[in-house]
Image (cartoon, rainbow, N blue to C red; front, side, top):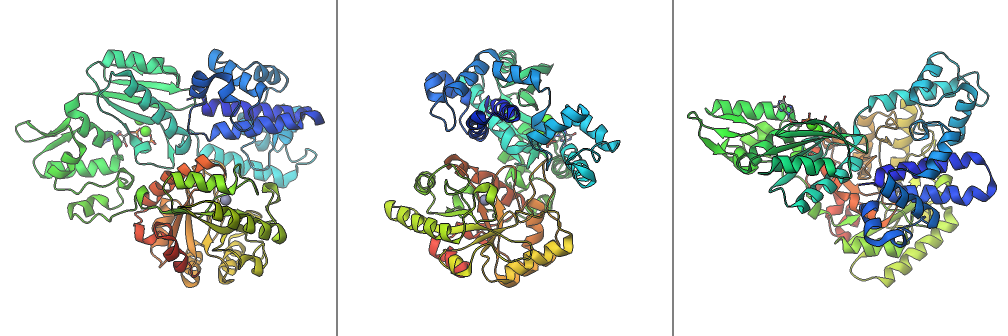
Length: 575
Ligand code: DGT
Ligand code: CA
Ligand code: CA
Ligand code: ZN
């Protein structure tokens, strides 16, 4: 899987080109950035695209012209990108990490390098600690404090990778191993199987009689950078994306027991093992054994739970949050499944910062079996995303109506992701919002407001009567941006009082609300929606991340509005 690495290189080239400040290069910068975005969030591997269709196939990707296609080819074939290496000699700075800090773009990062020789996060940290940034022109004390906060967030996520980046790598490796013909059963285990929002490492479980050959095959896969440890039943590798992966090779007869064991989490396992002991059994990664050491379960995970008198639950629920106790009573709630989802309420198009047309989005959604798709492009205050003012929004809504007339089998709904302004008012006129099927509202600016003010801002918006869905409620970005400060209990109460739906945004670095907040919100009479926030057709596939987050919060389909048919869903939202 080359996508993440190549996307990072292209992004960094864009940052370095931008510093050259030659106007004729603006387009090049934009092209590199667009290509980086395309490749970074693509499901298909760019290496496969190249090996199957050559440079011509690469050039069909949005933003990829001849030059970028050549650079990708070069990297896939040689592991180097000359353009990157050349620029890097002139700008020896870790742009990708440093620009993750809020308030630091490529130019400001370069300024820090020219003035203070800051090349990486460690240098930046030292400069902050010795208060050298505050005296720099264009920075000041406030921005030094902001940077300090940004560093702390980056470091708290240290070593854990966003699931949406790690899981496609694991899936690609599983597919390669399957093709190899060397393995029988194979499964992703660990936190990736439990669909935690971030993973510390990947775990892949393999049943095979050819452990030696499997180990060799693993070390030859293109995703693998180096071998950390290699033993007869376990191989640990470092992946190119900067994450470790544990491969465990077991016998067919132990596969189910091993899958149960290595899925975890640890606390869940400890309790399950206690139950086994209580019944006179012994449970480990090789199987479930009775008093005479005879195996009574091992090949299938289901059998392990069944023999222990437990109801099996989805891996997402195995976090020792009460599921073990409920499973003994066979009272595990029937949590939502991906197949329950009938529509998507949060998507963007070319009209603002998306990359596809309304019709293209709808066609793709239809292919996924969705019955409806809400188009929710940004309102005017989101000027970075080319947000629409009232006049343009009305034209866009008419455009959506037209597209709706051109497609059968899926309904396209009119909406907008409307900014909640500082004072809690909404960014569009009421008569514009009244033309929509429903509205989606979210906070995008002044994220650092004190808690009380932010709480009032959101509640004021909810009380306007014009908010159907509160989108990505806490506004956090995993490993990059902290949640906004607000009194969640008061906000959830206001959502209940005003019939506002809370979103679970499925975009992999948002996943907002997260499991803990879903559990908290479930205590109120609130409905939820699970939406992709797609900015491109294939982002509509992100739904599984949102559904898993809902499962982690134990949500049932009945509490999720977009499991309902369109008319019922709209009625539920008071439309
Ligand atoms: P991560 O990698 O930090 O995102 O989280 P996990 O859950 O994938 O943890 P990992 O990779 O250390 O181990 C995978 C699973 O193996 C874990 O969820 C449960 C099981 N496991 C690991 N160590 C132990 C242990 O000492 N006792 C028990 N009962 N299970 C363990
Ligand atoms: Ca793991
Ligand atoms: Ca592990
Ligand atoms: Zn959005």
